[in-house]
Amino acid sequence: MLKAGLSGGIGSGKTTVSKVFQTLGIPVFYADQVVKELYNTHEGLHNAMINLLGPSIYVDGKIQIKELAASVFKDKQLLLQVNALTHPLVEEVFDNWTAQQNAPYVMHEAAILFESGIAAKMDVTISITAPEVLRIQRVMQRDLCTEEQVTLRIASQWSDEQRNAKAGFVIINDEKRALLPQVIAIHEKILNRI
Ligand code: ATP
Image 1: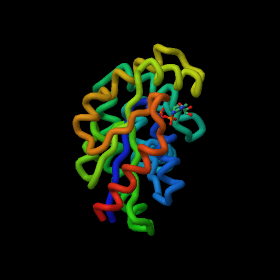
Image 2: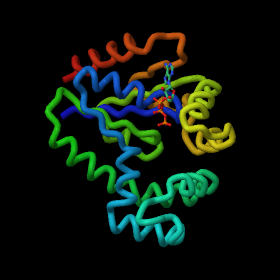
Image 3: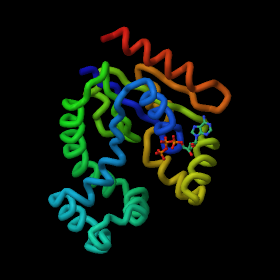
């Protein structure tokens, strides 16, 4: 089955665009959600995370996502170590999930699709871009967090320019250009490749 990868920085609109692909009948794999579940359900990962970050990173068996984000987004080395633990597991879950889908193609959505190397395993890739001021505003409003928290996260990810240079397709989500025609045009081009 053809695999499409969808990525964009925090607040770029990955989830928003993914929902449009879902309405077109395309199953979407939300890698960032899968990672959050794996922290709580995969025993090996649970133990490795405690080794890396100490036992307080779990409370009642649940990963403390805010504390984890605060630690990894100010320590690049730690972020790389956590990613190295999670990536092979996510890939395995994705492969199993893909095998169960019945659709023209599947979509793998991930914030760090390109950084993690997963993009290289996709048949096509899409980058969603949006002006940084907009992304910061959107996330502050959605997550009720500070500008500093959002910019710290942005600094840990690739820039739009880096993602766009690697991606086969680029979607501009600047609230000026309409999203739907952009998504439909890409969907049709992917279908034509099958
Ligand atoms: P994250 O990396 O944090 O998961 P994301 O890339 O998935 O973010 P979304 O959650 O899709 O981004 O969008 C961030 C916020 O901006 C959401 O609250 C969403 O509703 C809003 N948003 C996204 N695109 C638009 C748009 N074109 N017009 C208005 N609001 C938008």
